[in-house]
Every structure is written in structure tokens, then in C-alpha cells.
Length: 480
Image (tube, rainbow, N blue to C red; front, top):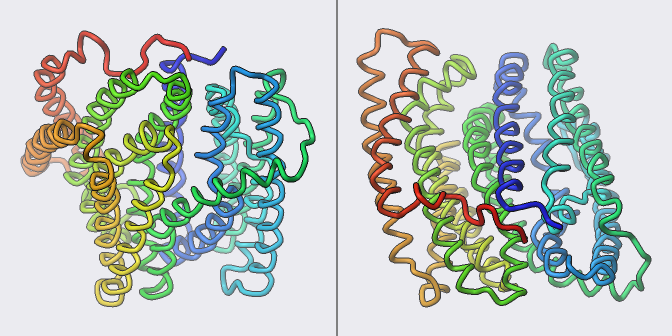
């Protein structure tokens, strides 16, 4: 039986919280050890490796979850589906591994040494079974085992990375951690699903729908990964270092959004198979309120303290990262809005073309704006490009789905929580000006003041929506 949605959410959010905090521990150490240029060099190699891994997984993180969730009540069909998808995964990931070696030995420039030691990232794609566990509705093995592996990797960073010349060690540590983390989740499948060789044609039938979703995954990577590559190539490694550290904080915080969406997608896919459409609509409404409340607090909160936080966290050399971080924080609201629609309405219904069209439109906008602005505005041009891209995605979704979903109510939630967030931002900035402290103590007081103001202003909204009585987590207590 699948684990309850509430427990899955707890495991996944806890794991995401850990994943957020871990980079916040290692990033300042790396920044001070290797400087802006070293950070830019490492992340150039990492981002290219990440693109290869995206291609190797070919949209499986969405398609595989949905496919397994739909058949998880029928063991025989489940085994055949799992086996066919994994065989396809082996073929695609194997081909990408060969291409990765071609890049490392024939194309890579000054990042070649680091790139070589990131090879295990591509190898890990051969044995990545997160999609199967999530489709089965079990997030516990992924959360617990990866937490342990990443903790060990972080410890190795502090022990072995001492100077810029040790960047390759940093890459090897995290690359190896990814492989071990994937392998550690394999026992979680034992007794629940089995591999049985199936004909090649049965595997290939999954290739086209996976490839369709990969188009969207590739498009997202344009404004999540390629913008950094473009900043590095056009504006230089130092500017990429500033942008990377600013974007890292926002990307980590967006993990909370994806944590809830990741938990809800297999649940909603299962409900969709059972024809529980009205119940799905209620889940979406609760999720939208929850997500917009959370992301508005994060967006306005980060914008309020970005300048002070970046200097305290990364050091004086990265003061400009705070300038980039403040506007970049508002992408969280757009990401949250689009994520609810994608994971709880579009993908569970198999309407992948809507997802593809929205993110491709966003990627096109991002690419155009980057090409126009990065040469003159450098990393700030990439920030504007990302803002425009993330805004495009929910707008396109609205144009395609406005007759199916109550967008008026969703936009009402957005306005309410954005208004509360603006009041919080003003209070936090005023608190910062009145405080005699400029260090971590002052920042802690600002954050605490912001949380109190935001929470108090949200109370009447939650009471009116009935969230305090019913609980704001969709699917509370139910098992599917």
C-alpha cells in the first residue's frame, strides 16, 4: 500500500529542506576557497554535465512517475511497464554517456579536468530509479538514503578541498555521491516491482512520449542552466560566479515548491485513472493557496534581505550577488503558480503538449532576452531574461486552460499573498535601518520580524478560507 500523502510530503519537504541547507553550508566555503572565477569555472563544467544528464533521463522524472502511478495496483502490468521503461532508459543513458566522453576528450576547454571527474553523474543515470519509487508513492527511501550520502559528501568537501587546484575533487565528490545515492535507493524497490526482460518494441513505445516531455525539460534547462553558460561565455567567469551564487539561493528555495508538486503528481495521476475529477479540483485549489502563501513569503523575504545576506554569507567579494538575488527572488511566485497547474492538472491528464508549449515559449523568451541584454548588462541581463521566461510559462498555461480552471480565484490568492508580502518587505527593511547591528544577529532579527508580520497578516486569510480548521495540506490523512 502506498504511503499516505501527508507522510510523503513530510519526507519530501524534509529532504528538500536538507537539500536547501546543505549547499548553504558548502557554498560559502567553496566561494572563499576558490573565489568568483573558481566558482564560475566549476559551475560551467557542472552545468554542461547537467544538460547531458537531462538528455540521458529523457523526461523520465515526469513520464516514469505518471506511468508507474497509473498501473501500480496491477503487479503484472507494473512489472512490464517498469521493465520496458528501464530498458529504454539504459539505451538512452548509455548513448549519452558515450557522447559525454566525446565532449570531455574532444571539446572541453579549461574545465576539462573538472568535467572528467563529473563523469559519474552520467553513469548514475543508468541506475536512477527515483521515478519508479515516486510512482509507487514511496518517498522515504529517496529522502533518507540520499540525506545520508549527501551528508558524507559534504564532510569530504571540507576535508579534501583546500585550494582552487582541488576543484576536481569537489566535482568527484558530488559526482560519486549522486551515483551512490541512486544505487542506495535500489533496495527500496525489492518486493514491490521486478525486472522482466521485454521485447525491444515494448521499450521503444515509451520513447516518443518520453521524448515529448524531454522537449520541455530541455527548454527549462535553457533558462535554468544555459543562462549560466551564456553569462560565462559572453560576460566572463567572474560574472557567472556572481550569478551562480545568486541563483543558487533561489533554486534551493524553489525546491520547496517542487517537493509538494512531486508528491502530488503520482497521487493525482492515480486519482485521474479512477475518474475522481471533482476531488482533483479541490486538491488544486488547496494546493494553489498553500503554494502561493509559501512562495510569496519567500520571494518578498529574500528581496528584503538579499543585499545584507549575500555579503554575510558569501563574503564581500560577492556583494553583487545580492543585487542579482533581489529581483530573481520573484521568479518563485511564477514558478509556484505554474508548478501547481503542471503537476496537478496538465501532466496527470497526459496533456503533455500544453506543458511543452508553455515551457518552450518561456525558453524562447529567455534566449532572446539573454542574447539582447547579457552583452550590455552582463549577469543582470540574465536575471531579466529569467524573470521574463518564468512569467511566460503561467501566461501561456492561462491562455490554454482559462476555460477549465478558476484562474480568477487563483489570481485572487496571488494578489492577497503578494500584498501581505509587500507589507512584510517594508517592515523588514525598516527594521534593518533601525537596528544597531549589521551582522548575523541583525539579519536574524529582520527575518524573525518578517515571519511574525507575515504570519499575523495571513491568519485572517487562512480563517476565511477554512484552512486553519481543515488543514492546509491537500490529501491529509488519505491513502492512495
